[in-house]
Length: 182
Image 1 (cartoon, rainbow, N blue to C red):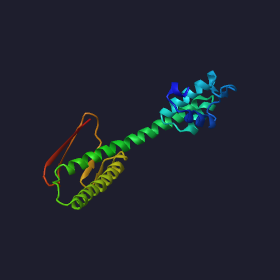
Image 2 (image 1 turned 45 degrees about the vertical axis):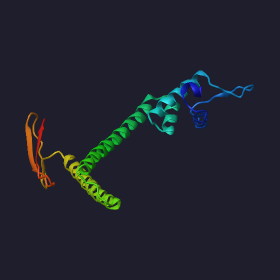
Image 3 (image 1 turned 90 degrees about the vertical axis):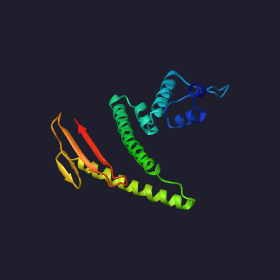
Image 4 (image 1 turned 180 degrees about the horizontal axis):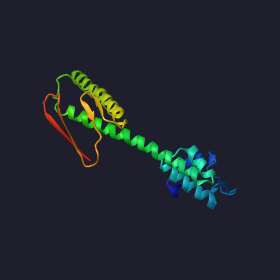
């Protein structure tokens, strides 16, 4: 069974030790024998583990006859994945910012200087990005018109357009134009 399912026999034994299913031993060969119910349970464990549902939760699902319990566990897993996705998107955005900071940097003659410059630049970007994300989250979580420093968020009826011009403090002195439509 382990070969057919792409599992190790160790994994199957560990799942059986957790009482996720039961098998019998063939007294002559010593091989494990799985009845239909055990096979169905193994397949469900495999599916749920592929979805990263913890073993304890898998056992609860297998031992319960109430589908509401499985729904709650699956909903919890979806919420966890959504939270992880937010973190991944934030890290991806931050890495993009790091890359844009690193692109114009020139190589230095000393590797130590290069590392110090990179660390200083990236640390500044990380701190400012984390602060910005926290400030925006605090502001956006309220449902009102708010003014916070140079940022102003106003909630308009649908089909209105909000435009904001920001003069960038970066070395290029670019004029950025942000247009938001709903």
